[in-house]
Amino acid sequence: MPPSAGKVTEVKLVLLGDSNVGKSSLVLRFVRNSFNAEQVTTVGAAFLQAPVPLEDSDDKIQFGIWDTAGSERYKTLAPMYYRGAEAAIIVYDITDFESFEGAKTWVKELKLYGQPNVVIALAANKCDMEEYRVVSTQEGQAYADAHEMSYFETSAKTNTNVRKMFVELAQCVPRKDALNDTTSLEAASSSKKGACC
Image 1 (cartoon, rainbow, N blue to C red):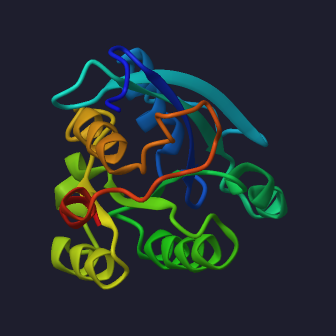
Image 2: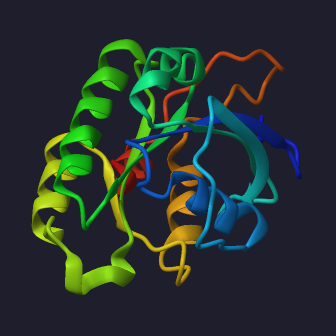
């Protein structure tokens, strides 16, 4: 039985990464199409929602987005936010090698303690600052490929690949059972999975 037209599926999405990599800026660019160069550091976590239309369908994904604090003192709270997340964006700053190493730690933690089928995107943020780059595109892409993640070079400032990242992530999230309204997940089709992971 085909899914009913216009179905909205709620999906928990978490952003993880070290402090000052631009997680909040990416979320605000996507949800409100705004950018603030003086963005205040997130304390604890912030929650926003945004719908994403699905390709070849009238259905939508309603992302419930948890923007987590990256500072050391809040890292113990992270499991509370990524527990049950069906999608995640791990963010690092291309001008800060330590943030790339931090992203690797977040990936390991998420794969150990997160949902088994969580769909992950790796965001190489601040690509507008190319002249200060210390993490190459090849290095980021290779790490993402090795860990079956999508890879995006993003900039909240110039709005580079921000919407594309969220939209492609939405296409990859396994669909909830359309036959009844339970929260059990169906496996994503192998063709969709291959395109995203």
